[in-house]
Length: 486
Ligand code: SAH
Image (cartoon, rainbow, N blue to C red; front, side, top):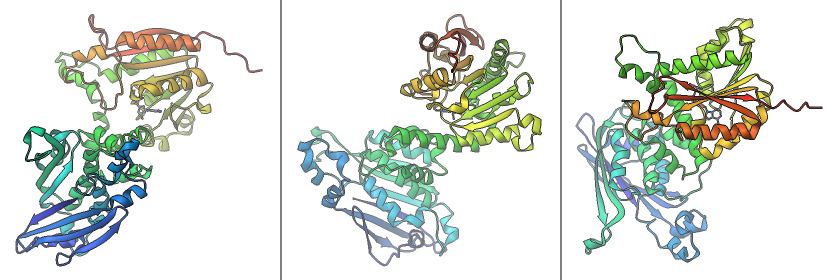
């Protein structure tokens, strides 16, 4: 399996600088042993005008099996032979990506002591991968590389050129060209996207894969339109890890964007409806509805579960009838932003004694959440995978058991009214589901029944006669007296 990286140059900026950038001398062929076989770096061409470096990995299929790393492809017992006789030696796959990071590790980090200024600047690059297994076909290859500024040429390889009627193989010939990328960026794109396209599990996904992915994805993955696919495939569909990675990427994105952009869809309604008076953004209407419901319930000690960046906590602080406010979120980054928003470090002692931010996951019971008057779950449940919802239900309604629980979530029926939302799309990339009014009611009624609560429903935002309001809120009130602990 192999790939080539070429560049062009001028007398002032000779193409052979590629050798410095890669930390591999153009005049030598070098070999490195990796856990999967021998990697060779050689330069088929090296002149000031044109320079091409080739990375060739001689995969040791037998060693691969012995190390238990060829498993993904094997599977069924009768496929044992496939562990030895397979495409691994020829096709550029995740193994090549691993070799890439091993052989060109400094280049991937953008380190070049001999030519530091060149490492930081974009250069004309041409990368060829003659045989790339591409699950998802040429179309996916384009969707992965084009947003990163590459001109992509991708040809599907026939199963057998002699017999075109056999159709296409799952391999493509890939050519990437760009004048706008640094070598380090190019290597990091390949390092992540080759295994994504290969989509086979060749090596164990360890927890530090998340860190590797985030490091290689720095500067581009957080904004990539296919972030979810890249993350889940890269982490071999290990959802827990993929979620962790996406959570951290989302935080990168949040930290990089202005706070005001975060509620973009909610606020988009402003731009859509050109009314005389500026309508109140939905996020604000939601907070007002929540505050009203909390006041009506007479709550003083309130949990904001999944508090995000702390907008509701901030609003609660302004009303002295809320004597204790606790914001909880799984994401440390969101909490950091919240604490900055609230100016926790500069707050007077009295104010500070009313508010607390806790890191924790709502999918686990948490003693710290016991004994409050009310809990708010504002736009949180839809961020959990459906199978995790019973865990949250138990943690909140079964264990924490505040007298009042407010749950808000988007009403998916209303999505047709958002002009800025393409048909069939959820409002936020991280929403795992969005419910109709009937679905939300069914869930809420069942939860209330299971845990001894009554529930009422309150529309938030304009209540459309056909599709209902944009946000639906359930107000749960505990009906059963708590059994007195002896
Ligand atoms: N309540 C805020 C933020 C909603 S965004 C608002 O109404 O604007 C959803 C928030 O839930 C995010 O901050 C996310 O980090 C948090 N979250 C998602 N899953 C969680 C979990 N399992 N435990 C705690 N918080 C979670």
